[in-house]
Amino acid sequence: MKSIFYTDDSKLLAGITMKDETAPEANNMALHVCDDPAVIVENRTSLAALLNRSLDDLVCAQQTHSANFYRVKTADKGRGATELGSAITDTDALYTYEPGIVLSSFAADCVPLLFSNESAGVVGAVHSGWQGTVKEVSLKLFQHLIEVEQCRPEDFRIQIGPALSQEKFEVDEDVYLKFKALGYADSFAYFNEETGKYHIDNQLVVKKQCELAGIPAEAIAVDRICTYQDPSGFSYREDRQAGRHMAFIMKK
Image (cartoon, rainbow, N blue to C red; front, side, top):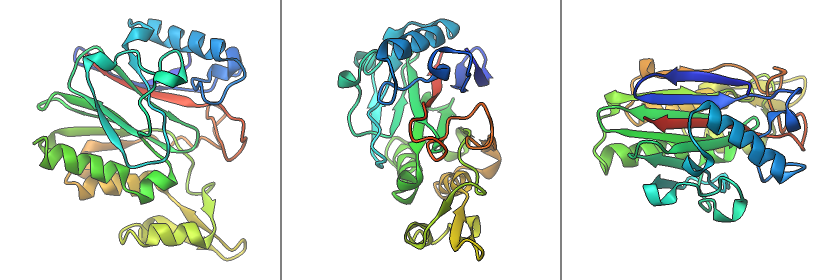
């Protein structure tokens, strides 16, 4: 099971699966874009075994490029793990205070974000494609956790996972203007006069959103693997039929 582990200690497990052409369906983890759902379930079963868990511990969302977030509880364990119908609907960020639950985020160019706050006892996974970024899903989630659930911003630790690089994330003016309207994303965009396209660093805009919520910059790590350029990356922009990475996090 080709994966990157960002944290694996006595309290926390966090990482992301990577594309592997030698594996079934290239190690695709997504039921919503696959050739054979049974293969995806088998891939997820292999990942669960690697994590010393079962599929009953996995929780998945039906991601819709929204700014919606959901607090996962023990009763949610297994939702979306083996079939789409039971996944948490219309949600792009999951968080939990419960141990032993594997939260997931699926991406192929979009920004996956994993976070923990040891003092508050919360962990979470976020999916932020460009639409989720302009809707400020990360900022809204962290504002909620800090202002409503009383998590201390200085105690968060954040890992932003592999995504489409600024070089490869080129957009037309209409999308650029949505980023510009945020009021803080201009320094993460440039215009290519030769192509007439704008290039945006979605990872760093998401990082900025975390900082705007009050999280210290030094608490935010960014994995700069480009999902388009790296052979271990799934890229929707490169291949509309691409599989998906699964970013995962679990409080032990």
